[in-house]
Length: 310
Image (tube, rainbow, N blue to C red; front, top):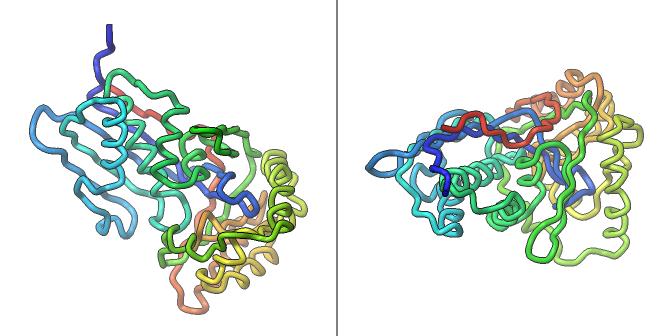
């Protein structure tokens, strides 16, 4: 006998920082900053969508073109379940279009909710991940947001193979977030279609060492280990005063400073002196009258959580 469908679900989905230097499109780290999503089946009427939270949320569509609703509808079609009218409440804490995986949280939440609301839960986590990545376009942010921790992911036949690692408990990610957006699609347009063989080898050789350092807490030489040749040299031109922020962060005690995802946020990794690092990097922008904010976050090891289901 089929289970009765759930009529209310509340989800918490973490932010993520992806690429981690040389891990372009394959490494991601979930962070303790969360977006919240509530889904309630209505007896009748039309779907209602409400959003609140971070600056810029009013610019998001409040119709069926919203990313959360599109993710819901995609899974409903795949599982052949008619989507009922819903009340969807979204509370955003993750800055939009800054390189912290806000869009990834919307896709993860929408697809997971559709799977649960069907009452049959037809798709496995692997199947869900495949559909999530198809919609997002790249797997690094969404895999970390879904499963938590430090994740490595690769394409495998028609799906994806992922490995989840537990990052060092005292690791800190210092985020400096400029007050301007940088859509991932814009940043990707700068990347060349072909790269030198030596550059590809350089990035590949660094990935196991990035994972080892972030999990062991032995962060010496992390800047050199995270050195990237596939995306940062091309994208950093879109991030104002990138080189100066990196230099000041390292001088203040950061063990590595890299782009967070496609940017424009930068992430500095450290075990101590987090406040000093945040102040030093933020000051580079503040002195040039560029508004910015900072966050000091720890890794999230749980991923997407079902907070309530009824």
